[in-house]
Every structure is written in C-alpha cells, then in structure tokens.
Image (cartoon, rainbow, N blue to C red):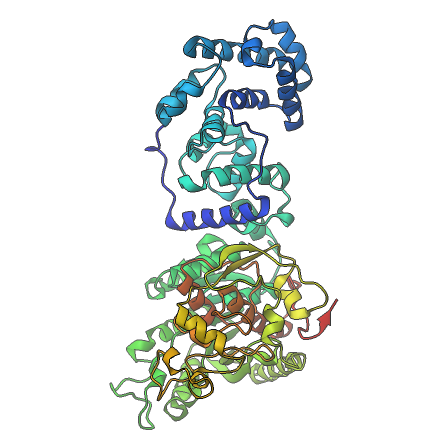
Length: 638
C-alpha cells in the first residue's frame, strides 16, 4: 500500500479533477450505495457483491441477516445451508466457503467475529491484514476501510475504472482491474476520494455504461473518449477551417465552431485561457493547441498544421503602440513605426502567421481607440502591412456595437476584415457587409441586462460556487436566456466575491444607474468613498437592469465596484459577466477568480463571433451545416 510508484497528476489535471468532483457532487449528491457502517457487515456485503448484480447481492445480504442474527452463527453454520440461501445471487458455493473462512479467521484472531480491534491500526497495517483474508482484494479492503472506518482511500470497481479510463485518468480499463486499482489508489486528493468514489460509481452505473450515454453526460468535455469521438466527426468531408491566434479563452473560436467551422489550430500564451479553451472544445486535438509564447513557434509548425487549407485566420493581437500621443507621423516618440514598435511585436507575429497560412479571409479584432490613434495613421500602417503581404490582402474596417446583434452589452469593437487579393475581393467585402447588416436588423430592441441574468441563482456577497444547480425559471423567458441556458442542469463559475462592510453599505445605498457621485451629493455619505472626491466619482456604479450592460472589461476583478448587481448589493459574478458576453452556461472557466474575469473581458462575445462566422460561411461556401444555431434573440418564447 505505497504511493511512491504512482505518478502525481499535473496541476491542470488536478484542476479538472476538482471540477469533475464538483459537477458529480451536484449531480448525484453523494449517494448511499447501501454500504454498511459496521466493518464486518461491510466485508460480508462487498464479498457478496463480487461479480453479482446489485439487486441480487443486496437481497442475499438481507437473507443472511434474517437467517443468522449474528455472524458467529454464520461462522458455524453448515456450508450447504449457506449455499442454499446464496444460490439466487450466484456463485453460492464459492461465496459460502469464503464467508465461513473469513468469519472463522476473525473469531480466531480477536476472540469473536469482529473488526473493532483494528480500528486504531495504521492504514498500512490494516490493509495488510484485510488483504490477508481469503478473496479480499485491494478494492474490497479499501471499501471496508473507507465506508466503515472513515479512511481516506479510494476503492475502484469496474464502473469507476471504466469512467476513469474514459476520462483519461488511468491508462487501464476494467479488463485490467488490478493495475487500474493500483494506479487510482493515490491519484486523487485525500479530501476528494470519498465523494469521487460514490459519485463516479453512480455515473458509471447510470450514464457511463459499457455503451455510454454521452449525450446525457455532464462531464463529457473532460472525457478523452468523448473528445476523440468529436474529433472523428466530419472526417473526410470538405468543411471550412479557422485558425485563432491570440485566442484567449476562445470567444471567437466558440462562435466559429458553432457556425460549423473546424479548427485548424489555436494559439495563446495565457495558460489559464488556453486550458479553458481546451476544456470547452473537445473537438480540437491537443496537437492543434499551441501553448506559450507564439514567438517561439516556428513557421514550419504553422505550415504543417495548415496543410489542409485554412479558410479564415482570426485573432486579436495586442497593439499597445497606437495609444501614444504625438505629432502626425507614423513614428512614435522612440522613432519606431507602428509595425516596428517593440510593444507591437505580437502584431507582427499575427502578420507572420497570415503570411505562412495564406487564408482566404483574415479577421483582426481591436478596440475602437485604434481608429483615432495618431490621427488615424496607425490604421493606415495596418492597411499597408496587409497589402504588403504575399499574397496581398484587401482590408475593410468595420465598427461593431455588440448590442445591435442581440447581446446585452454596449461593447464597441473594430474588426479589420481582409480578403486575399483578387478581382473579387471588393465584391466579397461588400457582400459580407450586407449580410452583417441583415443580422444587425434582427438585434433590436437591445437585450437588457436583467433579461440575461434574471434566472441565475440569487446569491449574496461571498456565496456561490464553481458549480451550482440551475434555477428553473417559471413563466416566459427570452430567447437570449434560452440560448445561453441551453438546457444545462448546472451553472458554472457563479461565485460572488466578498465585500467589506463599507462597500456593502454603499452598494445598498445606490439605486440602479447611480454612481459614487450620488453617494456624496444625493445621500451625503462621502465617508463611504475610498476614491478622491474631486475625480473618479464613477468608480462606483450600480448597473441598470432595463438596458444593456456597459462594456465588460478585462480588469473587472479590480473594477468590481463599477459593476454592482442591480438588485443584490454585490459585484457581479463571473457567470453573470459571461452571460453578458453571451457565453453559454456550460462553458467552464478555469483559473483564479481574477483570471476568469480577465478572460471574459478580453473575449469576443461568442454570439457576435457566430454572426460574423455565419456571414463568412455563406460567402465561402461549405457542405457542412452549423453545429448549433443562434436564432434572433430578443423575441420572447414560452
């Protein structure tokens, strides 16, 4: 019983195990599988369960208890008598002999049939003793230790091994039970072993059966078996392909995938963001997920990943240099052009990827400030850079307001849409703009903040969890909520930050739409303000529920005072921010609280990405239908 030979899981694997545990606990509620508190009862119960259906071994246990009021009587009973009782459950001769031998041994070792004297033994000593009994395997010993003695061990039956093998936690399937049990014994953190055991057992019995019900599985995105099946879909058929560079958590990827695109590769340097993208996109194989600094990725690797033509390259490379104020010149205060500014090295990497992959269409996203930076000269530089590629790209600039497309957020963004130079490039761009305008006409009136978050569990400051059960909403609901809820039984990342008493008092004072200025002028409470009273009076802001939210920002974790819930005195949760950004409830963000907010604030809203992808798809042409459609969002539905 040593854990030295068992490899420790990585930090990423541990994070996923914790999320799986939380989902399963919410799903199955740590069920009682009929196990016994008395260790001898449990030992008999587990011996009876070997290679037997649950209903049969439970009836057999109850029959033994009725016929033998104490285990001492069973120890001295004729074997034929015990066999007759156990015959309906199967293996009656083997189990009768095993039980008699075990009970006689206990009587000899402890003066009576009991395991009470071993309760104070160490885990190692207890394990060695139990496995010295006939037909007591590691799994049987661990069941007795865990259920009857509260030891933090992990028994694994065939159901659990099957689930863990499909999840990729163990290399061995049910046919290699002993090796799988040995590997699983010490992989899980001690505090999770009991809940994982009882809930994985239920999941294996009801969902992850020999023929799995993947369509009903709540943990399938963490499952290697499911992810492999997703990657095999559409194999051999011509479908459109997209590459997402500086992908973040995958807002852009999410929309393109839902529009029916296949992902050629994604790349990002934020480990939490790329982990989040991988968890939520099981169809993307590991070799197509490029982690780390893109500058260290050789061009040959991009070329190899795009052997099958990439139709669209998307991304939002950081462009800090454009924000420098100065004279009307393409050089900044350091004498560098926009392209050569060291801070825009990542922008040059985006150009490198485009030059290597040579997609039909390029889509680059940025903030509106880039249009006015240095009187528009940086935009001219970007247009020249794309025109100077081989082949050149004809680029059109579009400014998009997210609320015009049914997203409950006033978020303006700039997209540079480039088409590989040809005589038809301008016509393609004109047609794209026309389709975008058609979608835009479906997005009025704007979706309000409250219609997006109304049905989320109403938690207070400091409450919530990474996994909570969804709250059924009575009556009618908007199509937007029908879209982001999508039938999910759980809501992820719905956890509210803690606030100090001063902030809570101020939050309760402000009415929806009011800011810190009102605390001073209207309510005469300057003592509640922590910012200077002569400036930054909007650092506190209670959101209005009857209109779209302000722009969700990447530094929301630090700017929580600007996003106060309209009805509950607290900052909005990660899930509420994700709802505003149009992420579905089953989209899981991994990482710390602050990093989750950062990922959401940096993301392109998936719904906006879907609209853009759909417009491009209609023009590029494909045989493949969207995997899941987004419909007009502002109408109400029963």
